[in-house]
Image (cartoon, rainbow, N blue to C red; front, top):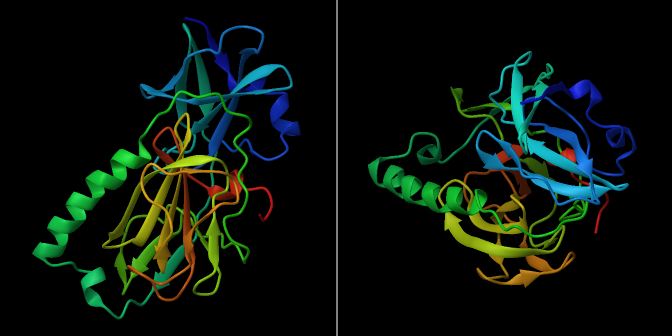
Length: 267
């Protein structure tokens, strides 16, 4: 198989209107994978299919990179019978220390742990979905207007106890603010989950999935087809929170990626 470098990967990356090439932990690698006048190539990372869209007459693959990949490591991406190499660059994430008054959210009991386990299976199934449809460049509108925090990737401590890095963006908005679909998509899961509170998960196709947490109200049901701008719920403070806001998560090939790399403008 042919092995190539990412240095030759993407003339279009520098001209992309929205999606940003950021080959870092929790980032997105954009690869030019061939002329768009041929059949769309099969692109795989770690055995999982990768979103591929067309831009300027070329196919471009958008590979979601896990937060736990080591900077300096080289990841192999399968493009048909070839192999491409993505070199992971260094990126520093900050720490965040929060005080949670309800200590059950910090040290859940046995019943809560059983509930968390059941919910994790349901959430993971929704986040790992794949619908093989044709997509344009996967640019997303902001689901609410408000200050977008740089909270993705934060190394978090709740009541001084370390927890997993933050895998979304917190957007400041008042309780009850309408939340709008950032792109056409299908509702694949809704629920009142232990940590996430009232939650909606949208599947936009080809492994692009978005998640909305801590809602005060859910306005859609699984199976609903939404257009960009449709209201899916309202900002709230349910689940493990310190106040009202929207936790907005974006996923590619089952991997949480920084939403800032996909967001364009407000709705």
